[in-house]
Image 1 (cartoon, helix red, strand yellow):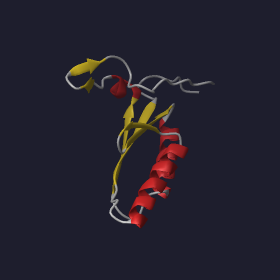
Image 2: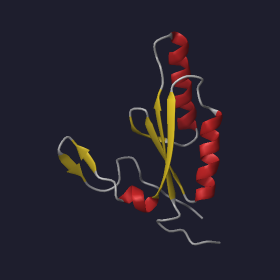
Image 3: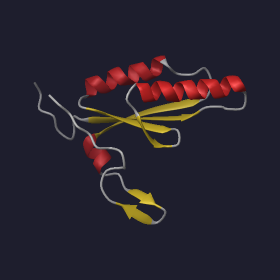
Image 4: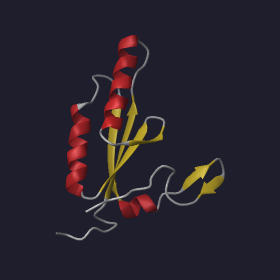
Amino acid sequence: MERLNEYRIMWIFVFFDLPTDTALERKAHTQFRKDVLKQGFTRFQFSIYTRHCPSRELADMHIARVKKTLPELGKVGILTITDKQFSMMELFYGKKKQKGAPEGFVQLELF
């Protein structure tokens, strides 16, 4: 088995901008958001959700699941980065820089 490291561990970001003008559009928006949450993603910001994956293969599996739930209208982006790249992210609250991983991103992997 290949040893896990910060270049093999992946983070998936799902970005979306979906219309909410009609009741049907709002329902589709809510359903997509719920589907993403059910798949283990965590809200990073409004309409940006992220998920930690211990390998590229698992990331590909979760990406395929997201693609199966895409709504008919709107824009959805999927971005995959390594754990090393994620750790280099700079986060700010206003002009104040936050330290460490984004809030809510405590990961526990059991093997």
